Length: 492
Image 1 (cartoon, rainbow, N blue to C red):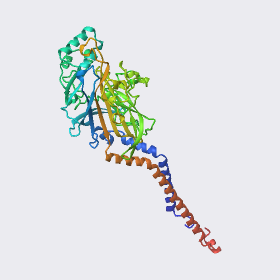
Image 2 (cartoon, rainbow, N blue to C red):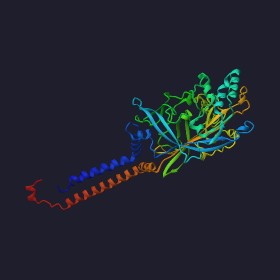
Image 3 (spheres, rainbow, N blue to C red):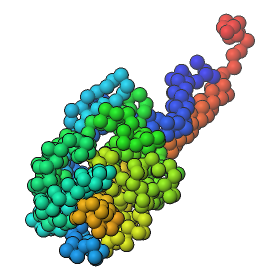
Image 4 (cartoon, helix red, strand yellow):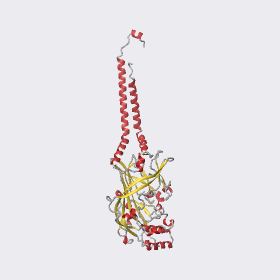
């Protein structure tokens, strides 16, 4: 019909207008849409990709467990001379980690599991062998003396005679492999089997001692863990229970709070004001990491969060840390973990007493704290919450103090004796970083692309409208006028 645009043109114009509005709405809500899609991809279900990668991490991201041992070079002159430490290592082990015994709890959107860890010594990249001879503190004797601190005179004298009878010294010299995973025999361990649990702090009887003895191929290292799956909209991977408890039984008040990431899933949209919360089973607590700086790895921006001077503070800087002390809290920068180590005199710090009380470095020689080498940090892509680089580091120290009724420890100074420090460092590979760059580009440019699409559709609709108007005007202009006779025959 003349003077009117064809219906298909009107329909096309309407469709274009709707597409323009849809593209504009998508551009305006792109961040929300992206977050919803990303959350759905990270949510753990029995068939999701995130669950399968969490359950069995890909081999493309190798995980190495590195141990640096302190060799005590002047043990024969202690306590007259300050202990001199020479760092040996790293003794590097390839770690294969797998989450097993997974149980789904659909009623509260969680799953429970245990972690199986296997360690394989990497002789090719280690700086030393497991046959290296290491002189270190006699930890078995030090633990026995520490547990006897509240005993009466007669019991302490009995322990003193027992240490002398078994030929115990202040130090021991063992192979590196024995100190780490293989363990070594000691007559005090046999004696401990006959003692009541109250005398051993409830520690299970063992036939050998090694710092990681029994950990290889074990399901008990990290214990029973229950985390959120994210199906209810919560962030996945947040710890809910540890060893069937919803709190940390070794502490009181807010220090007993069980919170933070279990390690694999981290918060998204992090800022410089954010604080990262992480539960660390080896520390038996949740730690808080503060923002340090930003940078770039493999073309991806990151925010670095690290344990700071406040993290293991003895309440000097952070009074809220008092409930972590458990009675022994003399030095800042050190955490007392004896409560979750069967009453042994174990204290955790950052390597080389980084961020610790300066007096700790006066007690020994040979330690040189360096943030570049000794920080505990996570470098995280802030928008996606994906760790790009991780360096988990901590040092194990043993408290020794004078005991007037025990000859072996009668004249020792009260000090923290550094024994070793460990590092687990991970850096994402190029394949994963390439995928993350695509995801990040989608986030950064998705709204712009949609806005451009909305503008393009709007221009097309405007052009179509203009063309239809010109068409109608053209038809009206050239329409032949009807004469009087034609109007009578065709009044319409």
